[in-house]
Amino acid sequence: MKKMKINTKKKLIFFGTLAVLLLVFSIFSEYLTPYDPYEQDLSIAKQAPSAEHLLGTDRYGRDMLSRVIIGSQASIYSTLILVAVITIIGTIIGIICGLSGKAVDVILMRISDIFLAFPGLVFALAIAGVLGGGIHNAIIALAAVSWPKFARLARSQTLAIKETAFIEASKLSGTGVFKMVFKHILPNIIGPILVTAVLDIGTMMMELAGLSFLGLGAKPPIAEWGSMMSDARSMLATAPWIVMAPGIAIFISVMIFNLLGDTLRDFADPKGR
Image (tube, rainbow, N blue to C red):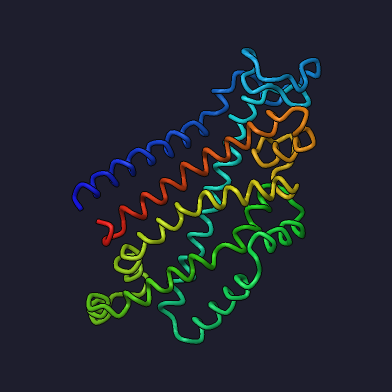
């Protein structure tokens, strides 16, 4: 068991380091591009990968490596903002449900049931279509359909902990609701919520890229991996590198965050340790 714990910790450090490096890479992406990612040169349009352009060029002669690098900002940070929003909103609603009376709990949970009754991505497509597309509206659309998972998790954790002896002692000592939440409840339920949030990063990244691919996310000429794949899908047979470059970037990023989430879940599981 001790050896298993050490191995899990090493994996957690390794994948955590990869995730941090990916985030740092995104922050400084504008300084790492070998060419201007938005500069067009039709004389080299759809040029295959070469020593000069490692990932080739797109239909407008823009360097694909530069566009993939700069596209990490829109793709990764939009995903992190989305996950942060649904985690915070869902956790707040879940704690309210767990601490409030039956009427409030029933109303909020029935609202979450309504959102869960529809396929998530289909519902997000409808909301994004009504809002008119764009990366910000795509984030709003996905946030609107993704918060119930965190609300239910936070609610179940709150219900489990609010009957414990130290919570009862806190109530008897006259501790206010807000102080009790931030001092006792939130620190004891935040672990499973953060693990779920990390595991959700990969899923949200793919769904955000999916909306952009369908024209309801980032709009050209903004470099975003999903919209880049959508813009090049008609050239899959003639210039496949234009589609493959952002696709591989999505694959690598999702894989890193999924592996980090799986390892974090194993490390946090007391049975696994």
